[in-house]
Image (cartoon, rainbow, N blue to C red; front, side, top):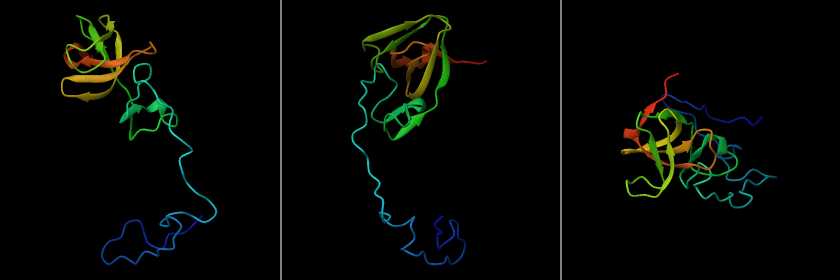
Amino acid sequence: MARISAPLFAFGDPEPVNPLDEYLRKSAPGRELSLAGPSPRADGVALPVRGDLAHIRLAGIHFVPHYAVPMPHIAKAGGATVRKAGTDDAEVIASLEPGAQFDVLEIAGEWAWGEVAGRLGEVGYVALAELEVRRD
């Protein structure tokens, strides 16, 4: 195991960091780190993945800056509507019966983005007013 020449946390006058440490070199001799090619492209409707965010189960399959653990919510008494975009006039993807689970991956403004639990291929936006946190 390579040894780093400076402590990870230093208080006061830190020791100078050796620029030849393996952790600090741009590339280590004998091996190169690179992407093998583009990440598989997903349409964002069948899988919970966008250019900036994906479900944690897709880590290692789709490369995005952030992965999210789903936050289980349920449709309120009046049900909920899953839409292609976070607007009231966006195309409807699915309707949720009262009590149906929707796994929220992101909340932005008055909309939640995520997927319908247990039904593959239904990923979209639901108005927060139509959801409540699942309490089990």
